[in-house]
Structure formats: structure tokens, C-alpha cells
Image (cartoon, rainbow, N blue to C red):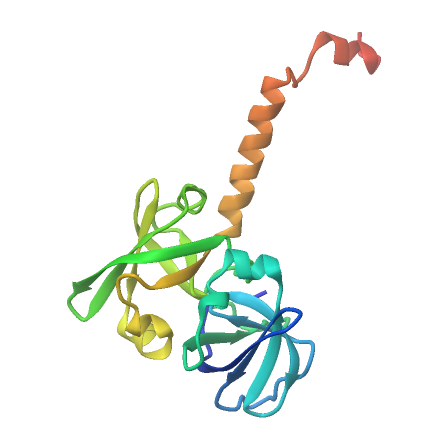
Length: 216
């Protein structure tokens, strides 16, 4: 699990395609070195470290991850947001981020707002439906607050610190970003869908159900 607080900006160094997609990233060393098998969120996508040293690591990318995220479209030299998985007892500064991207969005506009700026992002309707104003969303793995919302778009505001410490500082119209909706919103939608389906099937408390269970 992650919190959406990016720890480093890394660089994509190598893209390999053999029996699958393998990516190699470089980064400035962490105080505690990476170890094979641990999880790192790369632009919001949870990847498993396959091999590593103090300043580089490689990770395999599933076909499903290629389909749902922007990782397959990255080129060597691309800057990526990196966050290591939480440890039990760590400070929880952002929101619950699983690293399971729901889909890609495209930046439609970058809107100056004094020292800050807003990003309007075209997104799948399912992502917009799982979002609420003032709720949380992960954009390229960055925990942000939804400041505007439509049927197929959302807007987030970016403060100077976030712009300086993540790759969103260089974001521009046309860029593709990974989006992960707040897991609480997804569970609420799933519950509502199940309730509707149950009603359509004639579910709920019936006389037949009471009789079958010995109440009447």
C-alpha cells in the first residue's frame, strides 16, 4: 500500500521487450537500499523490484498493466514518480493508494492560479463516477484533491511543492497520466450496483424467504 506522497523522481533508463516488458529505472539512493521483491509505485503503478543496486532497479510489467497504464508508452529519459510501499507504523500523509491504476487520463488544460496551477484531465467515465469534489485521487501516483468534476473529466490543483518534487511540475496538455480513484469510492459504487442488481432480480426480504427459514 502507498500514500501518494512521492519520494523521488526517477529516470527510465532502459526498455526491453522479449517475452514481456521489462523497465529499468535510475534514482538517487534511498537511506535504506531497495531489495528484490519489494514494491515500488512508478507513476502510481505498483511494480515489484526484480533486481536492483543502490541507484537502479528493474521491474517486469504485466500485459494487464501495459493495457491499463501509461508505462508501455514511456521512452528512455522519461521522468517518473517513485514511492516505496508503506511500512507498518509509517506516517500516513496522503490517502490510501493501492498502486492499481484504473485507467489513463489526458491533460486537457493547465490553468495558472497564482503561484499554483490546476490540471483539467479528460478521464474514463468510470473514474469520474468514482470521484467526488474534495475527495482524493492519485494522478501519476500523486495524492491530490479533486477540485472540479464532470462526467468525463476532473480537475486537481497543484501546489509549488508538488510541482517541484514530482513530474506533474512539467505536465502539459496532451500528456497521458495514470489515474487511481479513491478505493472508498469504488467500494461504494460496487455496493450500490449490487443493491440495484439484487432489486432487479427480485431480491430482498420476501414471504417465501421467511417461510424457507422457519419464520412463518
